[in-house]
Image (cartoon, rainbow, N blue to C red):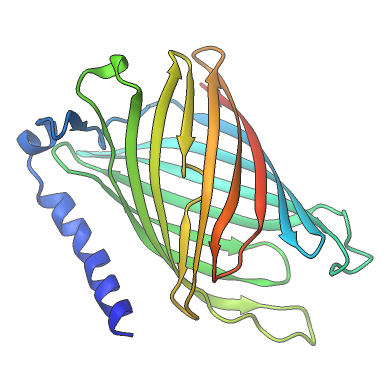
Length: 265
């Protein structure tokens, strides 16, 4: 509990540091990197995702996701709103026969983040709503920042964009006659790194899948996650990636492969 209190205190102090950072500091190169947390696209982006996850014991889950990014500009505050919705089909020996292979609503998410000129990073929040008759609502704050090389496209590094999010569960749901799921309390960490393979191709690590600490019951889930993105044109990008757990004292999945098509307009 002492570790969790210290972790929560440190997490809540981060927004104060982000807000108090001055513009000259954020634009001064540090180890060849400059702060780029307030650089954001004003495009609307619609993404179509597909996932194939192996959960162990010959059980699998296929997920279709629709994701939409919308820019937000409120006076001096500039940010992004992201909407997600997902349909999932699970199959394997632990699934009921009537639901095996059938896609059904899984969840919906709303995420908002942003900042002002001169901030060292962004602050935001996410809310997660279950769309089926099982699961629970989740909500929590997030903080993030981003750095890019001062010499621009000449560097192999595209960006370093860490993000931390803490999610709390409430209002659990379960089918009639079933016990309610335990409430979630977890820390999510995304140490995202992008590398340029060519002017239009990148490989990105821990962009889609990050590490998770289960604060409710203890245990870590740490994957290796990599995604290759290729921009066909200004408005079309596609990507393919995969993740494999390397530390799993908190169980989520064994491995995952995924891909997306992204349209900007």
